[in-house]
Length: 64
View (spheres, rainbow, N blue to C red):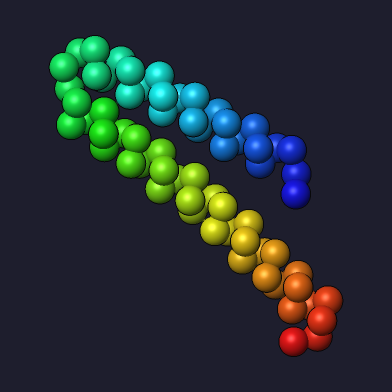
């Protein structure tokens, strides 16, 4: 696991949190919620890709 991955996820979280606050204060709660959901989907995509790589490595190590 690379530290770059953690910085990437943290950066996405910070950006999404700031956008959520800005949109909520502007009275656009529905767009704020959609921004939050988009951030969650992006992070889950990154995490799923890493988990897939982990399983591929485990298969290689145990010759499955």
